[in-house]
Image (cartoon, rainbow, N blue to C red; front, side, top):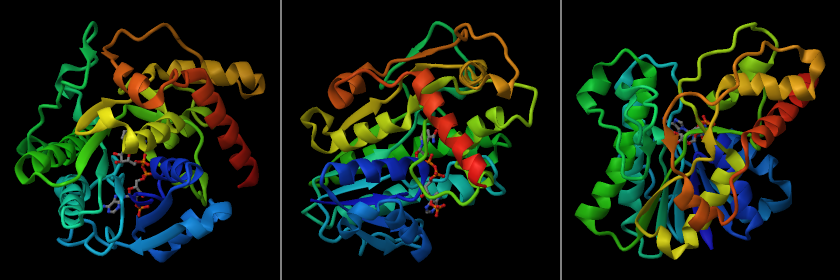
Length: 331
Ligand code: NDP
């Protein structure tokens, strides 16, 4: 079966591609350039006969995915900007998130062969940023980020704008299903910070994706301060990939929303894990007790999609940092 994967060259997309290929699917990767398509093929040399590519230069243009969806059985819509380095809230974050989702659903709705569309959403679409760390509260799949487009358009807080972009993108999916009643169903996957080893092509440690960069900046030895943990939920990228692929064929995932979250962390745990494994690094240490903050209930995805316990923080960070230090030696 053929799966269209957007954002396939990114951190999350590469792990999803790897999991799809390992499970025997054929994939068609939608990326912005030929060289990015080659990057995906290069990191999966043993499967290259099951990888097709299609170049979609601008996901916000109407009809962007009309060719890409042809003949596909499933769609994984992962592409969306995850950056806090923005100049124009609408152009850089809000529009690619929302219009990308709208355009892929529109394209999918004209192809009866498509059974399900998985939309990579985020805990950002769930959390109420204005309530801060909200000790004692447990977020579930019922919660929605209350941000409005107007607030997001005008905000000077890129974190707030990013969260809003994910809310509008996911909402677009649910509105499409409700109003257009397409023949496919959708599943949305909402994960907090995603950490763990990278599976995509990286030309330099200066060009890591946002969440990997956050860990690298803590462990690269260049700072003696541990940053504040603003988004204290995490999940391992390998669990995210398993959840995405399981969602394709799990009956209960039909028109279902999942929080895919392993638990709560704080950055002080990162340096403690690294110092234990690499005492010579002598990273700054701090309070590693549980942060006084909300909980995130990831149990539905654990039960229905993973069907095994989530990877814990120690393994997630330890595997990621081991790989980052290897890459450091090579660059
Ligand atoms: P990456 O930056 O590694 O990947 C983002 C992917 O989306 C890339 O393939 C990128 O393509 C593509 N993309 C970004 N902006 C655009 C755009 N304007 N037009 C077309 N393609 C675009 O980030 P992640 O892999 O971490 O993010 C993937 C998804 O996971 C996103 O939807 C993100 O919101 C979500 N997510 C990530 C979390 C994390 O902690 N990493 C947490 C929760 C959700 P290109 O290389 O061409 O820029």
